[in-house]
Length: 322
Image (tube, rainbow, N blue to C red; front, side, top):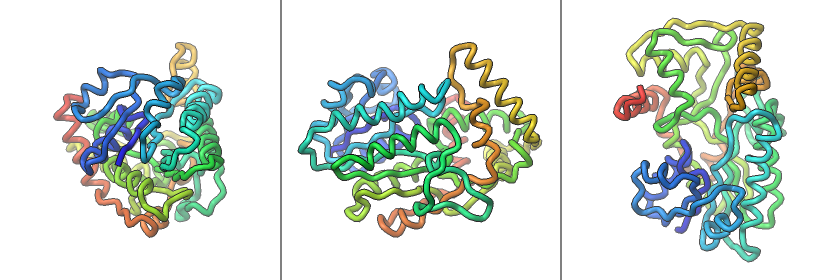
């Protein structure tokens, strides 16, 4: 099978490309930095130099693909407009680049942020109307709306928090745990669904290739729910420490996020820690049910949290990141 991947040199994209190569697919990647692609050790991947604003590169990548995996997007931005330009408008550009007679399938990697938070003990599923609470979630939902309106086959996957090799966001929690402390928003009781990146890659392939998954929206997660406190404690075990848990009460958390976001904005930088993310970090639960994806594609999450975090920590050490 011929696959075209946007965002292949990113965290999730790198795991997806690895999974596609392992199964023998012919892979083409849209890359902004050939040097970054070379660092991943790919010798059998066709590279198309460009980005989501490059219509020629997009057409070249889409031309002979059986499946298009749209992974590229922004997880941090300075404002809603910047999120929309990347996640919504970039998706629109990709859709416009697909030839009118194309008979393949488009797989969009969205986010649980598009669905919105829930309450403890009640993971959301695909039947719940989407209710994003952050600009990021709004931009991912906007991309979903475009994809669902296309007159071709599509599938959308909404993962929750993702961790694993090549990730630099969760790496920060590993470094803090190794230093002996772990801040948590609120009292640490926020419920979380998580997924190891290798499992997510397998879920994306299953969703993109299963005949019955056409024109469907899925959540992909490990079925076992954790808490923010439980997550950082597990990270501590992965690095051989029992970090001091530092609860950040809601008013302090909001002030801290606003301060970090303001400083980053003044410096002209984007950050995942900002005032508009308070609704996300302080929500009582970000959990979802993978039952439909499991039932309709046969996919199962294979890596539990402890195993995945130990595997991630070992990779961080081997690469000198930790």
